[in-house]
Image 1 (cartoon, one colour):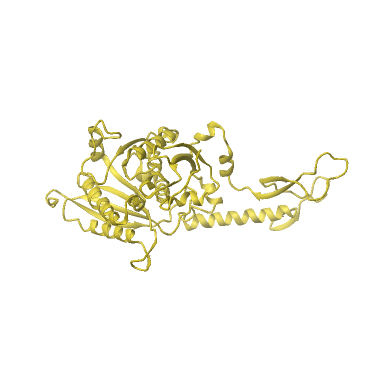
Image 2 (spheres, helix red, strand yellow):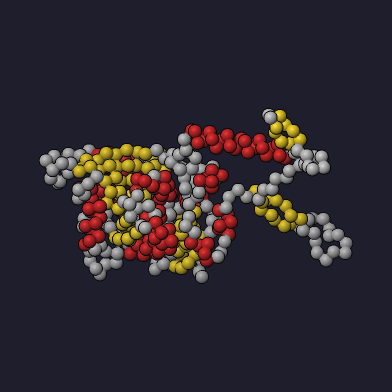
Length: 414
């Protein structure tokens, strides 16, 4: 295969920079010649999150104190056992065996063993050098063991999601990568499962489909939408790869095209991933949750002078058009990452796309005198972390609540 080269405008997601040792298996080249990889991301259990020191912010002070007390007790017991002593009625008593000798308990810890050869000369009359085992690193998590497994059945654990993606792309194809905003929104979904139970959900700018797949393990129906046939085919393959997670939960994911620049949904049967009439009716009648993971990254598909237009369309046209066609309340969750850039125009580090995005949300809230009322709030990002990624302070989660106005209060939309 020819050597892969990256152009000056190539963008690499921080997710894969944070996990340099993770397995990323290249499967094929897409129709534009980009290498396509499959990466595995594990949904961490409570024990794994605790041992990795992540996801503890969402716990109450009482739970954190309980974990701290248990850890102190374990450390204290371990030190006593290593000293060959036991506690009786508050005092330390030596531990003796049946012959009355001091009994020392040895604790066994899992370790990674590496065989290295000594620097000294080999002992005479030996055909091989001595090999001495040396402990290099303590093993505290089962993630490494799972990653090393190559058996077919290991590929379909219920807590492992497999995502097909590109590793680095030009700006116009960043939707084919995995971004931290998708993980932040997925963490929130897994932290609040009762909020999404049996819901009908619409995701805008779904990209690789990671957030939709996680949502489908809880919700009843997820309409996973984006634009671009190549991207939607990748998204559809990811849904198929993870059917072992979705089907047992009773959820369903339907990948459909939704272009923010188009007013109507595509129903042309000759167009791939077009909508059926019954799906449009179901989406408008039953959708109670709308998702948008890393909307700012999705708007990087075009030059910056078009980003403001896309952000406005995303905030006003798409969300406003959808919500005004709903006869019920709807909640929109938007995750994004502030990306700072140094500009010669201002000679300073700025985040103009993010600033304009917040302005759009503020103006969206002011449109409450028409057909529906919007309420915007930023949610704290201290909920539990279920995926192994770097949750930087620039990651934010926003909530927009849309409530239809009574018919007598509603005004015609211009």
